[in-house]
Amino acid sequence: MINRYINGIAGGFILISLALTHFVNPNWLWFTVFVGVNLLQSAFTNWCLMGIILKKLGIKEEGDSCRV
Image (cartoon, rainbow, N blue to C red; front, side, top):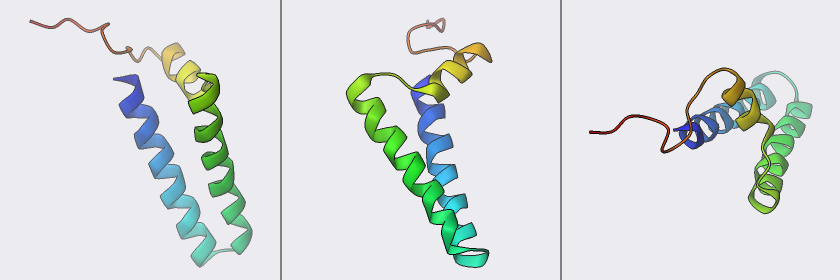
């Protein structure tokens, strides 16, 4: 469950930053780079700040929910 939230948030951040790059200022592209670098480092280190934040907000990880 938490991975779906992380993917959705990252995708939303990328789309928002691309829109800001197009309509406001090209320097917003650095935000897109920041999100991409964080996704890449989390693939290698298995550490994700957004995952920690979502856990503190009470989002359940896979396997934590009740299934029938």
